[in-house]
Each structure stands twice: as structure tokens, then as C-alpha cells.
Length: 319
Image 1 (cartoon, rainbow, N blue to C red):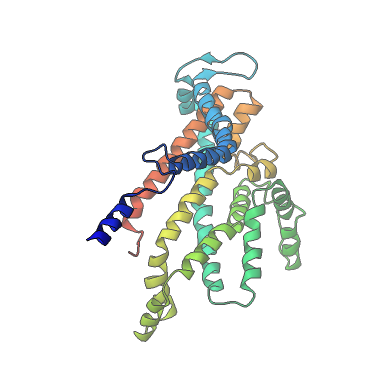
Image 2: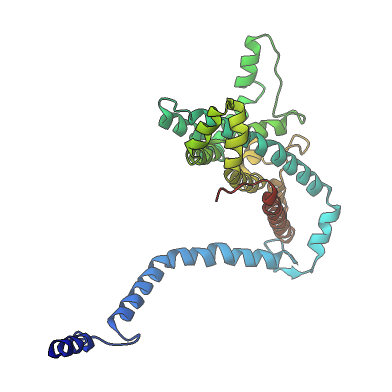
């Protein structure tokens, strides 16, 4: 009994310096850790409020004003938004932008998925090919690549030189309204590297046992792709689709450089963002440009929400 009593006494004893409650050493350490975390987050928080949230709130206010960058903003309510209903150039820019998105994004994702499937078969030097294919995604939005693209599709460009070798007379692909937008679509499709890498990562996550079972049942390559690969990749397809649609709506550099900032010829490459830039910095109608920016945000938000709703019917999640 004495031994049991001594054991109970030892259990009731607390180590030296032990304190109960939040005032103990553990609480002080947690406070120091939190302070350190906030200290490291300070540059990001400053950027968030000063560079992102601050300008967004300012542009929201300017969207309801008449502001020309020189005089003080004058509150005009919803006038900027009602002007959009009768702005023919804005309507044309919406048609051009939606055409660009609806054509280039599916082609880009299809090419990215095709090359991802090819690379997933164990091609020798895959790391090299993956880097080469990814490179256009890093450079596709740069001014240098847009200038190069302009030279390729110019009257004396590389494409016409290649066509001349087979006896076909080329034309000014960029200066022709019927083909100018197509050159920008081709440029966006060419930047398939980022979605391709994501597709490749998704292919690596598909269990091999599904393909083995399908092969035992006599399923061919196309049947395995249609019944296994595509359903298992639908979350990745959905992810890439949402990101690329948002990116396509924000395209600006390519159209600005290729058209010389005019959106020509005949406004055939007048993207919505390019027209927004023209209204804000070309005509100094910053209030109207701010309203256009928020309208673009609403368009992207609605399309993104529609994609999420539609994804319930075609995206398969393997639980």
C-alpha cells in the first residue's frame, strides 16, 4: 500500500516551472510563432491591400464617375453602364473575344491532351520534350513572341515563304480581316505547354489496373481512351478549361502588338481588353474603362459559375 501511495504522490506532482492556462510557456511560444508568421506575411499583405484590393475598390468607384485623368471624378451613377448598350465597338469587341475563346481554348486543350497521351507512353527523353513543349507557355504572352508571330504571318513572312516553295501565293495574313483573328487563335493554341503538363500529371495518377483489366476484356486503344482515360481525366479537363477560359478573356499583349494597338484590320482583332485599354488610355475615358473592367469581371464570374454547375453532369471524381 505504501508503494501505491508514493506512486500516486508522484503523479500528482508537477514539474518545476509548470503553469496552467494560457500564461504558460506553450502559450508564449504559440504567440511568438504567430507573430513570426505575420511578419513573414507582411509583404504579401501589403501587396494584397495596396496593389490588388485598393485599386479594385478605386476602379469600382470610378466606374460610376466621369473621369478623364486630369479633372476630379464626377459622379454620374449608372451612365457608364447604360452607354455600353449602344456602343457598337464594344459589341464587336465582345464578338471577337467570344469567338477567340470558343475556338482557341478547345483546340488548345485538345492538342495539349493529345501530346500528353503521347508523352505518357514512355518516350525516350521525355523530360526534354516536356520542357520544349512547355516553353511556349512561358513566352506566349511576351512582346517578343508577338513580334515574331507578326513576322511569321506578314506578307514577306516565313509562312508565305514556305507556301512559295510549293507554288502557292501567300497573302498578308495579319492585314486581312478574314484571317487576322485566326493568327491570334493559332498563337494561343501554340501555348499549350501548361495544360499539357497538368494533363501529363493527371495521366500518371490513373491506376494501371484499369487498363490491364480492359486489355484482358479485349478493349482496344481507342476504347480504353474513351472509357478509362477521358472519364478519369475529367477533373483535370475541368480545371484546365476554367483556367484557360479566364486566361483567354484576359488576352491583350498578342492583339496589341500584332495589330499595332489599333485592333485592326477593321477591328477584326479588337479584343475586349484592347478596347478597354483604348478607352482608358487612348481616349482618357477612365470612368467608362473602369465600368468595362467590372463588366468583364462579371462575364468571367458568370461563365466560371456556369462551368461549375455544368461540371456536376460530366466531371467524374473517383472516390
